[in-house]
Image 1 (cartoon, rainbow, N blue to C red):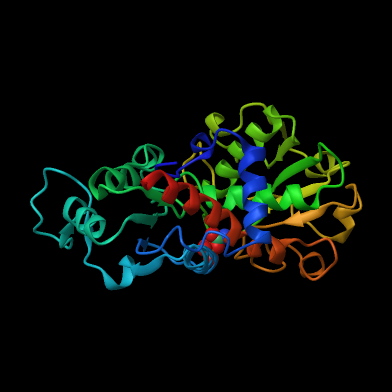
Image 2 (image 1 turned 60 degrees about the vertical axis):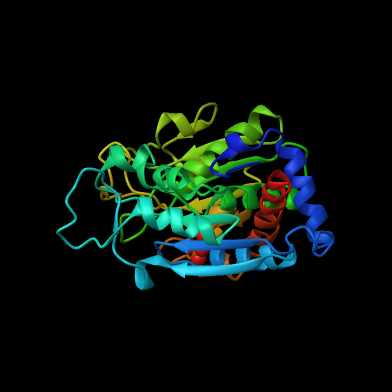
Length: 320
Ligand code: CP
């Protein structure tokens, strides 16, 4: 594995999940692999889980870790070519990425979308430029359109907790007060669609009208505008808010109740409930579910380490 950006970088989902679970059983089995190798984790946006789990995964593999909070501690970054930098930007991504590549064997980048410029976001302009100029392998710590380490974690968690060979998995839109990116639901959908192709899950997406995700991420998924109908017989419910893709970054008023609570959970097959976190309690997901027996959110966050570790292991092996 050279770079890790999407599900397309993995050829066998069951294989990578089983390898991640073997790392969970023996976290230090490959602690020599990363000796004298350095990973640089570059954040243009906030993070708790991605930052700490990727650091821990790298340390388990014997790597040295550098973390750069580029948004707070770095120079203001210019990404456009052909502009005279006489405004607020101080350093061009061409130099910044290339210099970081000189210090590190692998780089990780978190870069959220603008939610204003759909074309720049959906062509992954910033992430692709970073990869181009870094000159070393790059792992996505969440880009404008995808969050692959989260999605791999989610597949690992579903595999661990499923009670039938092919569980019904529902991605359920949830309310929020802010316009959020589509990266997590895009990515979850992309991974679940591939898992469905491989016979591992049945996958449904439920959202109010106007919140359709881009078709490129939802091929093969069953789509519903009715949460109660979608929840019928669900084994896993993955709760997440996102803003409109069509009317890019906009938030529409929704009159129906899309907040998952214990009453709605009765419609399911005693479903396990997942969320990538951070979550706004009783806005996005009810406290009674978060604090109840069906919540997997902490176990899911814990599995972030093994998703990161299997990806870094494969990237280190490809460096040789
Ligand atoms: N789920 C997730 O990526 O969490 P952070 O934004 O805290 O890293």
